[in-house]
Image (cartoon, rainbow, N blue to C red):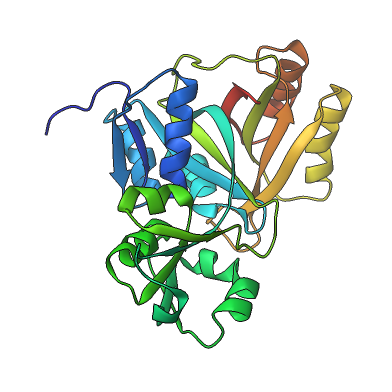
Length: 284
């Protein structure tokens, strides 16, 4: 197996997914005009590519405005990987009706897309393709690929995938809820030097309790409050060790270079089983 170039990006494939689009956006921010993109079949494989040094960067979705946190990403950060977050990119999610270049709506016999794509466009499908059966496929990119080669299939995905596979965008903005966004993290191997600059920083943490006891969450929150640190997000996840045993993911404003952040983290390290810094990175 030949080594990948240092600027390679691993992402959840196939080509044309929103992960692919986010990877290209990160490459552009890094000044990489022709990035080497490595398709991976799962988010765990993206983390493995980074941890094993197969590529320098990985791109993983962390949260969607409608569907919530991406649990596969969180579990990799907490339990499997030592990768660090180097940056964040928020992608606007706009679904399109994708068709064969020569097809019309009368030709469509099936609508195919990822389950989330179908779920997020129910109103449009009911109003415009009522009675047309739907089928689920592995990704929105796969639906664009199928539509490009079959007049009877309409896909739901992004315009980028339609262009990539030679399909036609029949209609844009067909999602039920406007303002849908997904945040993506750029990850690198543990200890990777910072690659992005900015004036505003965010630090992401995974916090593990010594024992589950009354006031445990209040104790965590108090340390940030005493230090004058604003919390951006907090959410719990099972530790996978016992029913009712949870850990916490926390995003805070500020950098690990800030004295108040260092103070809060040092105090938490005295009280918690583990304080895992997932990354400290600039935000747009």
